Image (cartoon, rainbow, N blue to C red; front, side, top):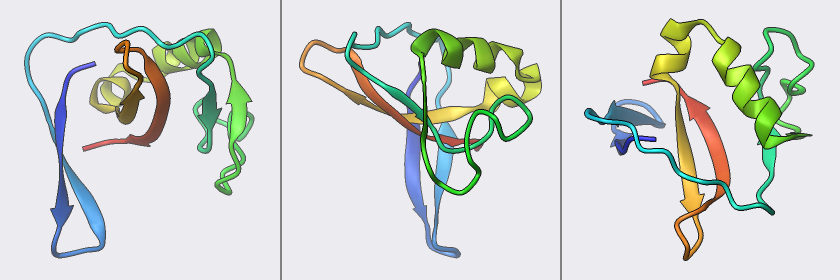
Length: 98
């Protein structure tokens, strides 16, 4: 991960994401964390319903799906992460592109 800045877009009812720069940092996911997909990641609709209904997937499967994405898409992908008191990711949501 690498930090980004999330700003309110005053022109539209959306967020403006300003990607960070520099070195990426690896962060661990908590063992009891879950990955819920609400958008297709496989290129079809098998990894998410496309209707906002989350589909559970394993952490390993999620990483595999991300590494299969076109590098131009993957490099610009961002997420909102939530951390526990030990610095582990407990929730990953809001896949976005800046």
